[in-house]
Length: 146
Image 1 (cartoon, rainbow, N blue to C red):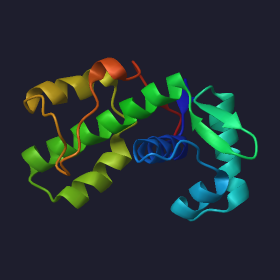
Image 2: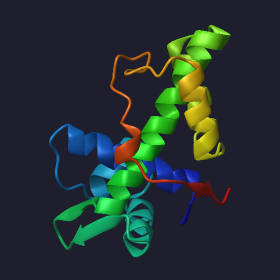
Image 3: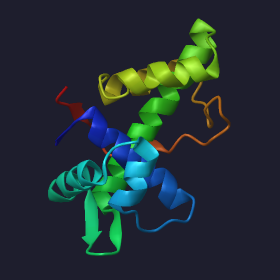
């Protein structure tokens, strides 16, 4: 399934909010977090629902579907592995590594991400101290249309 970098950002945010105990997320919340209009946020949420990554509860909000959660975990895994590699190998700051990882997390195939993971010693956490999602909980592959 093809996703855009914008859709990937939405999935990661919804995943993060879910981990913080917020079970449903609406367009208003997403618009506020991303500094976009509420209709724009709603449009992206509906696209993700149509792709099967979100479940929609009208007038209540959206939550990750099973496949959406697996994809969000893959995105987070990719991000954290790339971020960790950049800190360890390139010696750049965590903040800069985070920005760089965001730009390439969708671009590298899963097999490359996993080779990076192996080469940096299979870390359990990223430089922020947050756990890297286990591979078995992640979607197989993601592709970007951008």
